[in-house]
Image (cartoon, rainbow, N blue to C red; front, side, top):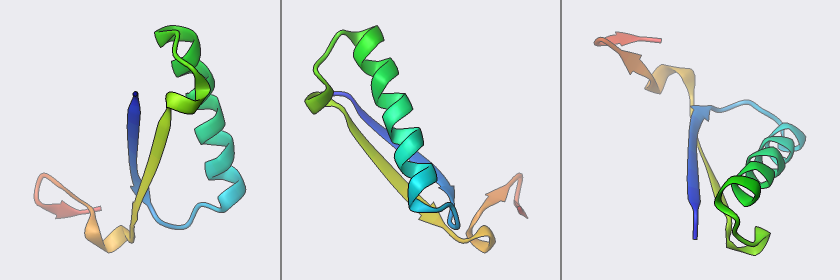
Length: 58
């Protein structure tokens, strides 16, 4: 069972996340040759103030 976790800033609407999950699912099904029902997509969202790179808040 492929599980894909997407970490991102919060703020995207549900329709955008639905479209992204569908697109990723389609590609996993095609590349890994698994059933759609086996693919799990997880969105982890956090506010901008919680993201850092090289010790600097993004």
